[in-house]
Length: 197
Image 1 (cartoon, rainbow, N blue to C red):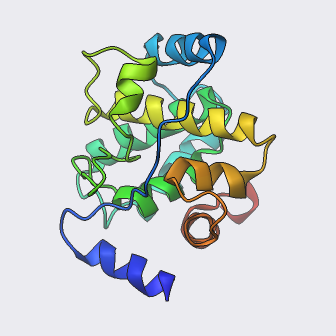
Image 2 (spheres, rainbow, N blue to C red):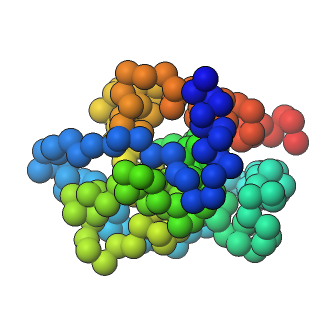
Image 3 (cartoon, rainbow, N blue to C red):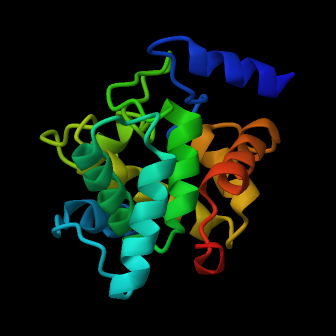
């Protein structure tokens, strides 16, 4: 039933998949670390894979994303930024693509009923908590930087438990619906293996 409901949300223009993500008080040291992570604005590039492997990954993902982002230059820039920000946060870029698919269906200006914004559906309270007022959550790099940093924080908090971390990210901790949607998208659409290329 949840799968049907979530599938229907993707058909509604402008609908976004953010749950009731809530502010959880952070220690001063955690807030400082997350703030530093958000503030660093390094130039995105595919630096974590060797030359041919980077090209193969980008080519593979570019084809998979074609129906969602039609312009090839925009698509490639998007994927390079996703790869950079995910890797920078110690996350699998394909997991991040899965979250984006479930959260916003690759819509840059998606806004949920709870007020979450952008590709990764980041709640505005995070800007006050770890960022600065100039950060625009609809900006590709800013949105991905926040989303990846927040997910990394939750993964660390949950000692690497993806199911619980995804539940926290969506504000549905303890419920299987959201993590299962992300896992399904990851395995069905975004898993990348050099052996299969």
